[in-house]
Length: 253
Ligand code: 13P
Image (cartoon, rainbow, N blue to C red):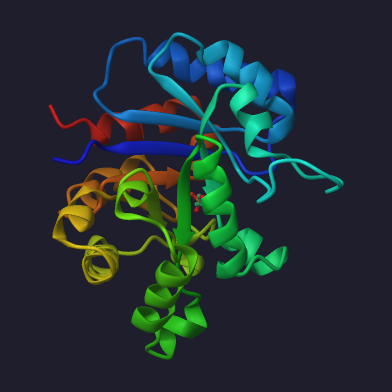
């Protein structure tokens, strides 16, 4: 049985004071153990504050990006060790916004995955097709290629630590969610790719999150799908009550 994982990707939102109040809101509502891995991914500038708020609770901290080198002359970048310093456990890699707007190829994502693992961070690796690619019948090819290239040369043991997030680009921030059946189909496909790259043990162990307009009203039916093991939440993670309702929908007890 894979443990559900719900992560909030706050993107480029929240000043320090706002981040503190959002994290505190989540913490108060999640005082009771949930049996779900809960992760908050604020912007870099609010990591320290959120780290202090969630310290000693079931809530873990994640970053939204990391550089692939451990240190050096990389102006504006942040290293894995810097994130560990702030008690970050997770890092989102290859989000479609980074792929589309900041030129992140799967080859770059692959370097970041390796750097994150070497720096003791758990990568959340995002994949997903655009609407044009879906309309052209290319979902399978696009997603399989992203998975294979982003995870190239990763050992089976390392793979078990990685989380994959399937985020169809057309569903992000649009209010247009993939139907549970559409999402399940691609999640099953991703698990099949892992089976081909590794074996059934690895394919069954890896958790695959869905992301794209997930909210309290649609979370339960998405999370009920056999290959959907959690959610990567954007907009709905900016409100503590919505986020906590999604965590509640993921509870397996
Ligand atoms: P929304 O939940 O706002 O659609 O964003 C999803 C996402 O991109 C999470 O990484």
